[in-house]
Image (cartoon, rainbow, N blue to C red; front, side):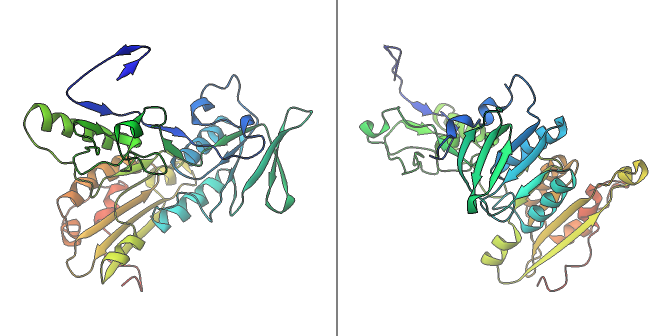
Length: 332
C-alpha cells in the first residue's frame, strides 16, 4: 500500500473504505448536497427537498422537518423504504405526511437550476417545476473502491464498484480482505464491525469465525423510527408454502394521556407449518430498542407459541408482540 509516496507492507491487507453518496448525471447536479454536507449548512433552509426515500432520505427528511423546514420528498417509486415490509412502508408514509412532509411518488428530477432570487428550481416529469431552497440527494451510495488500483492486483470488482468476497471476506487475491460497504454484502455498520472481528479472530487468534447473515436487525431513525428483523411478508411467501401474519396498530398509553396523535404498528410474520417466527417489524417510538431484543428471539428460532407463552410488561408497546393471538384474515 502506498500513501503520499510512502510504501507500507503487511502479511494481510484489509480494505474497509466504505461507501460514498452517488449522484445522477443531470444538469445542475452540482447545486445539490448529500448527507456529507447536510449537517454542515451555515443556516437552516426554509424549504428542503429530499430526493430518495431510503434510510438516509427519510432520516434527513425527519431531521429538517423537526427543525422547522418545509420538507418535500421526491420518490421514483410508489413509497418510501423500498425493500421493507409493505406494512411498515405504508405506515411510515402516513406518519411522515401527518407531520407535514410532502411526498411526491413516481417522480423524477430532470434538472436543477438556480433562479435570480437564489431559490432552486427543479424540473420534474411532465414539465412540472418545483421550487426549493436546498436539494439533498439520497438516491444511493456506491462502494469507495475507485483509485485503489484493485484491478491491477487482480482483485475482482463488480460493475458497481463492489469488491467480491467469499464467506470469510477474502477477495480473489490471497491475504487481501474487504469488509463493509465497499463489498457487495449487507451495508450496515454493525455488520462491517462483525466482519472485521471475525477476520481478526480467524487470522490472529486461530479461531475461525463466520458472520451469520440471517436475522440481522436494522433500524431507520426516521420520525417515527422503523425497525425490523428477519423476513418481510413478501420474502416469507416466496420461501415458505404457508405463511401467517399478525398485525396490530394502536395508540400507546403515553400518547393517550398526553393527547398526542401517535400510532404504533407491530407485525409478526410466521411459518404456519412450524410456527417459527420469520420476521418482526415495527413502526413507532422505541422501535429500534424493542426489535433489538426480538432479534435474539428470532436468532434462537423462537416460535409463535413461545411468544404467546411470554408474559408481557404492562403498559408497554413491546407487550403487543406477545399478545397478538389472531392472524390477519386471509393471511394464510
